[in-house]
Image (tube, rainbow, N blue to C red; front, top):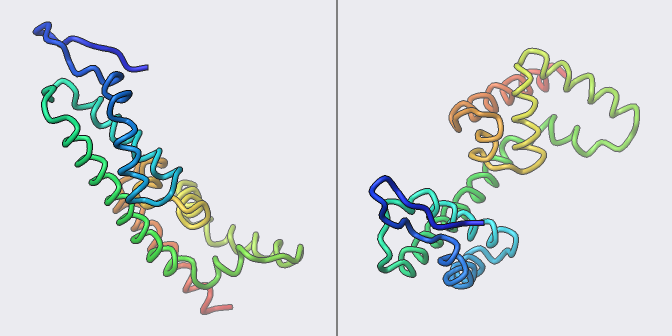
Length: 174
């Protein structure tokens, strides 16, 4: 749980736990209103209070409801933008061979698909397979994927572009 902390000057930092109890319902309502998805709204609300926790030493105990409302709005808008971008990226990235492999039902087709995936991924670092799985299969955003593998978003994009180029090259040969 959150607790009151003091800084070097012995001034009280914000008590994030009491702010969570007091303003949490308001922040959650705002997140629900913008995201229209309970799980995403709860996650966004938690992000608001994590951000508050990280910045608690530099904030004053004035106008916090407005600050939290604005933080919730900004975090939700970022989530919405990220999902839109991810949806557009996913449609482009998942076309072709990788999409067909994902929906195979026949066992012998699965063996061929597995061989093809091994051929695709053997030229790439193991983290590329992880990136592709997280982003293309599990639906992680580029930002979440980058965080999970410890890379920058541009590094993840570059790996996905390289992977797509190789898939397109192989698809042209098939």
